[in-house]
Length: 196
Image 1: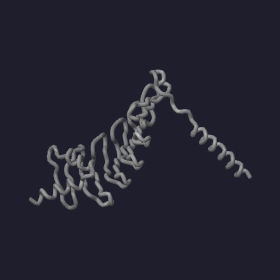
Image 2: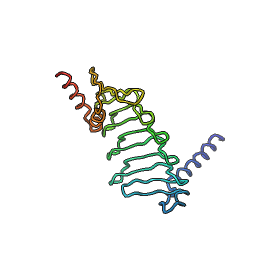
Image 3: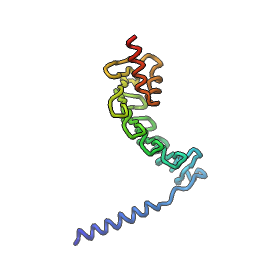
């Protein structure tokens, strides 16, 4: 009997908290510095909602597509990005997860295709790439590996069994192709050039 009573009381408390959370009052719109000190939100025309508390960005900033779907979440703590920044496709699937610590990219970064399948994964420390960053085809097969040295400099790209050292200025060309869904094109160009 004692166990059932405890369970009923626990359920009642949890239900009350959930009900309160569902109908919690939204933060008011920031109008002045006092509001920013006490807690408020800046609503921008581009759909970004930036929360403030103690005069600084604190909480999760959110941006929405024109259709109202979530586009971006950025966690802030004392005016700095801290936590995982998440970007979303318009279809609702995750586009990227980028961890931040003290306003710098730090940790395991993941980028996804619109289908939800993994496109890229790698480690970034203090804003610089470290080690191997793996790039995948949409079917899940490995397309390429981009390798960074301990200083965060992209050293080479491995496409299949072929390794290509990057020359000065080629780093942005490679990442531009990866971001634009053309990592295969980069590898094809490199493989073709190596046969000449």
